[in-house]
Amino acid sequence: MLTAGSAGKKESRRRRSFTPDLKAEVAELCRHRDLSVGQVAKSLDLAETTVRGRTKETEVGSSKRESLTTTPLAPVKPEQTQPTTHQTDWQRNRDRRQAAVVVLKPRYCDERTTRGMDISDLGALVITRRSGNEPITVGDASVGTLGEFWSWACSDLANNTMRGVLAEYLVATALGAATGTRTEWDTVDIRTPEGWRVEVKSAAYLQSWTQSRLSDISFSIAPASGWDARTGTASADVLRRSDVYVFCLLHHQDKQTLNPLNLDQWTFHVLPTRVLDERCPGQRTIRLSSLGFLSPLKTSFGGLHEAVAACADSIHGS
Image (cartoon, rainbow, N blue to C red; front, side, top):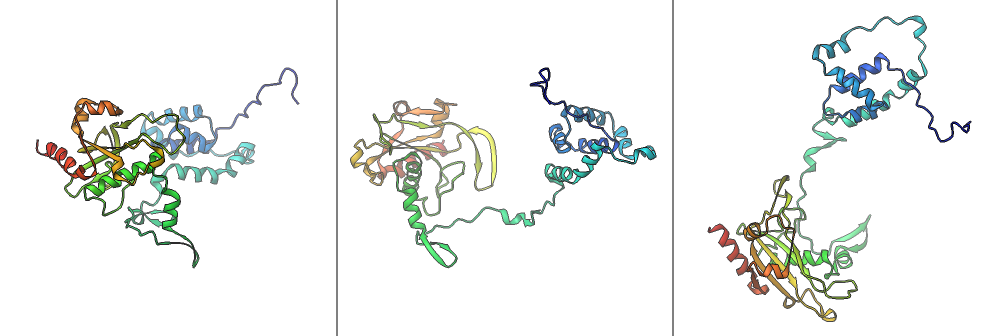
């Protein structure tokens, strides 16, 4: 029962007996440097300060750590054979604690398997182009087609996400690089047969949603870390990894006649990446007016391949 003097006070935590077995287990865990003090404390249901103190003891020297586990314990007196409440709880939950420690120490798992799966089965998927006629099935019954899913998910070409994907496809088509499939997380958007690395950015005056005015035009040019889809490796270096930037502007300004599939409604501004590195190092975005001061090659879809080639050649030929 709470009295007036004790109201609002937390019940004090029962002091636990730091038994020799528990000390040995803490010492054993403290030897493994892949476990933090917090992880060890949580797995054993102990305070971090207690474990930290034990950790300092284990760091005194290897001889002292060895003696911790090799020195025989003192004989148990008859009156000590009955376990305390804490010992009973500790023994009852030992399997649970050991299971938690296994999770925290993955290096003790079989390196060849994950839950019985051969890790060689976890390589990159080989993605092939689909036609849209592939059925979506339940058992032997078809409930739809992939093409119907595409129509449902991708028909709004004026939103930022799908417009950006469409812009990548348009540039890839102009550069003869659209024969395969799009790689979602590569460090650059397009790799051409000539070996050019191309980054594609898009913007538009008109959006899918209700607008009170035309959108301001700006493009992302932020350097970034990246993941190389070809090697499956990540790079922490923050930089621009392409040879050329293509800024795709859906310039049409009449919402009732907007059609992103009409290439006459697009303008393309092409710029060597090195110009951005020299003139805009570390800059994250660039407005259309500022982009004009960098003298990009401005072209329609028909001249896009020539413009990209000119920018790429200016880099590799220098």
